[in-house]
Amino acid sequence: MTDKRDEYVVRLSGVDVGTHKYTMVCDKAFFELTGLNEIEDGSIKVLIEMEKSATMLSFQLHFKGEITVICDRCLDFLTLPLDFTDFLVVNLVSQIDESFENDDNIWQLHEKAYELDLTHFLYETIELALPTQLIHSEENNCNPEMLQKLAEFAPKEEQQATETDPRWDALKNLKI
Ligand SMILES: [Zn+2]
Image: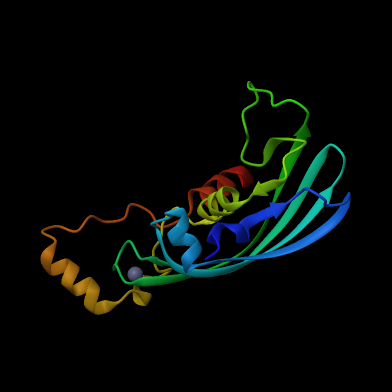
């Protein structure tokens, strides 16, 4: 048995300076491994291009696929497509600077490190890419039976204050 996590580890020792490509798949087993409870299922293919230099590893990552979560409104499954890119810069240092705080996208790593585990980066990036509200886009798309049952059992259903993405509201304000 091999450790499942090996799939998300990039070997560095013996890897030449230059461009290297990897494909990683974040599937149900990955989400179980990372304990990302919000995600019930999914399959996201991550195409990774790593540019290695003497002092730095520069990653470009393209995430594409879909994940299944639970709809906050009807509690039925909701499938969300994901298609986005992100980056990660890893500075290779001869001595780890303890005062350096790893940013989401900028890390430091000892130059003699023989591998880099991307598990944490992959799941954090996917989590950040999820919409703030996990609900079917329209109430019509929610499971009507589930909605009815919820209405029966909930003494008073809380109304969602707003379904618009706050980022869009911010954009609207900018235009004015
Ligand atoms: Zn729903």
